[in-house]
Amino acid sequence: MTKVFIDGKAGTTGLRIYERLAKRNDIEIVSLSEELRKDVSARKDAINSADVVFLCLPDDAAREAVALVENPSTIVIDASTAHRTCAGWAYGFAELSPEHRAAVARSKRIANPGCYASGFIALVYPLVKAGIVQSNYPFVCHAVSGYSGGGKKAIEQYEAAQREKSLDTPRLYALGLEHKHLPEMMKVCSLTQKPVFNPYICDYYNGMLVSVPLFLSFLPRRTGVEELKTLYREHYRGSRFVTVGAEESGFLAANALNDTNGLEIFVNGNAEQVVLSARLDNLGKGASGAAVQNMNIALGLDEGKGL
Image 1 (spheres, rainbow, N blue to C red):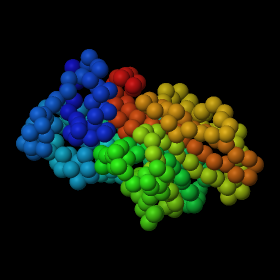
Image 2 (cartoon, rainbow, N blue to C red; image 1 turned 30 degrees about the horizontal axis):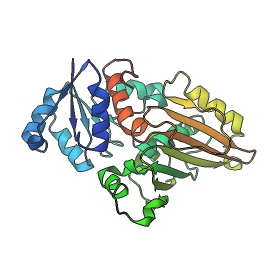
Image 3 (tube, rainbow, N blue to C red; image 1 turned 60 degrees about the vertical axis):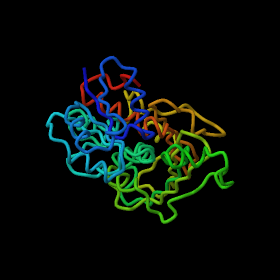
Image 4 (cartoon, helix red, strand yellow; image 1 turned 135 degrees about the vertical axis):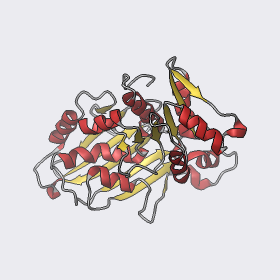
């Protein structure tokens, strides 16, 4: 029986992880009473008694939690931004390469990817690795997410009985062109030019669509829609959760993969321009689903167990 402690179980990601694991007969959840949930001594005991610890905390609190770990056997999976670009931490996107999968399988410290970052990296990493784009390509990324991605505060704001009319429409944010996911997007994809990232929060609960346009004439290698589809099919061949979506025409809905751990890639365009799109659940492959998948891999289990 694997003992699991979720530090930050009251948050959106923590609750989703708990719901997934509570149905399994191979997991024992280590729980703290409400009055001990923020008690450092109690948390330290829980962390070090567990085989796997999920950190669903703000960045500073996640760093503090890691400092409490004394048990060398404890596997830490951090869902915050705190360790995604840190040396010694495996980046928990196993489908990217055999090296990424191996790092997750052997590491005691795993950084769960960000939701937007998962979509962007799924699209861009194979392009850079194959030499189709150079590391200084001026990427632009547009993305929409359900409001659950904003956490408890955003959920309360959107679901309030009396709310601002502006919440009825998509809202662009990160207007200063800084976003917490940009460092991991750049590092994992080996980019030297910071992408222009335009994220929108929208009036629906969960689901995400991340899009990256390409000007084909700017690429160092001649390519097109079919060649790019083939690239993604080959790169993710054998992947259970990352797939190239069926041909779509008209509209791509952001919520089609809700409550799954799937990520679909779409390639659309013409002889001059292409738009690459990744669809996923910001609470699934973008958070709790990826975290459980990483735990399964680290424990040597079927990666899809419980997903």
